[in-house]
Image (cartoon, rainbow, N blue to C red; front, side, top):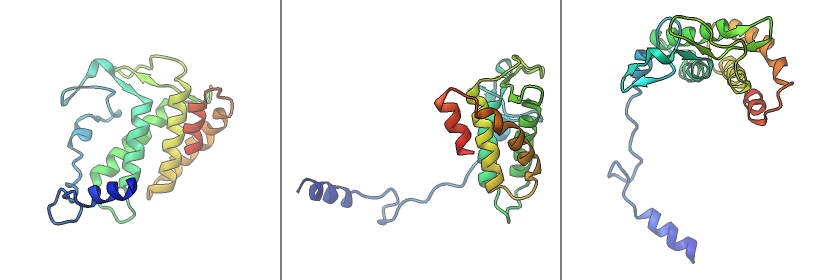
Amino acid sequence: ARQDKKAARLSTRPSLSGNGKPAALPPLNLAHLQRMTDSTGIFQHALYTAPNFSEGYCTDDNARGLMLTCYLQQPDAADESVQQLRSTFLAFLAHAFDRSTGRFRNFMSFDRRWLEKLGSTDSHGRAIWALGHCLRHASGGPSLAYQLFSEAAPTASKFESLRSTAFSLLG
């Protein structure tokens, strides 16, 4: 009886569109993502709508950007801006990967200096997740993603953090 009452309440709620159908989503607007990204990558933080240069960049956010742009990049998509963003985020991850350690660095200052030798295991896991996502969803150019994924994935097997391991497994 309780579930029937709840179902009745939910079925009588008006939809946002007013015609009994779910409201349509507005068109995707990537203007803020484009403002937050330069030729190096996406800035880590913003001051309202402007990039906060003093905080620099991080691998985590560029991995998230790569996941988004790979998801948006369909085989028939002709949107050059999405392709450009994807290329920038992938290039950032390539630069962040240190082959001598098998790890991704995480924090980079605005003047393009790495701020630590090893990034966190979480940032490494997110990078692997993004690269695997890119291999599954992006059309064209996944060879760099494949190379980075192949080189970075073995290191994840040594992580003690469950969250970092889970991020890696999602890739």
